[in-house]
Image 1 (cartoon, rainbow, N blue to C red):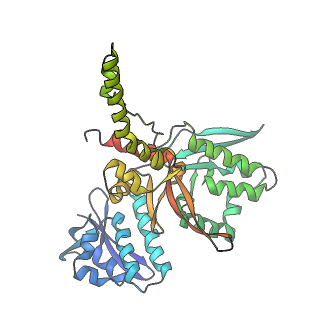
Image 2 (cartoon, rainbow, N blue to C red; image 1 turned 90 degrees about the vertical axis):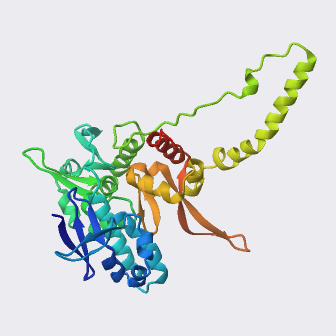
Length: 371
């Protein structure tokens, strides 16, 4: 029998059930009600917006109604934002709730062996890669100053910072920012990298400890340490142009003919070369649509693929990478220059880096070798 549960969001109830594999389905009707978008259910648009929709029973002895996976919640939110009068903060709360459900369903994360670096003699700090996060043993750090991590974590400003880091995707979810290990001599509080850096700033603000900690976190993120997903190397298959297989001419007439063929081939390939130089080689960042075009798929298919591979998630109305893949994405600021020549920056958009583009294409090809 499927396990049933009910979630409460700002006093509103959403029914859900877990199947035998403990995968959750959310009552689509309840979700539309709290979004004040019941019309989407009546006209069938809600089901069309959610590809994972299936009929399922949410109440004992009840009728089958539509249920969806958490990944489709953002499809509803994008539509609801255009028509609802609900506060933006409430929409964001539902989005965070859905992301927590998504993360809770991910397979058990890979943990690396503990990695120890010495800040200085007699001051070891242990790092560990847990899934897509870098965790730091902060008990080792605070012990050097006769303090405990809990002293910092109890401060109200720290708690507010944790919520802000979660909201801005600097860290994982609030509950996953910390874990503890127990045992005689092995008890420790582990904090996710960005939080550990802030703890260092609090406990030893002028020592350089925070900069050192951040440096080693970045090394673990970008260098060849075993992680949940290996850095991919693109393998390009180069095909030999047919003209290069022709034998060298032994007379002037054949030489002129070959020159003419080569000239025609260069002229034929010139637009392709110009396209590559403009849109690939000479660019530092790429939209998802550009990468999707290269793979001959839609941006929706691309984002869903990256989500299922545990590389990105949908948050604040855009797709953002998880912390381990920060080097795959960059922020491009929006700029406006006034008639007086002054430039103003207002917001930014997410783009894929050259490294991110190559990694995505390589990963797609690895997973779709038959195509």
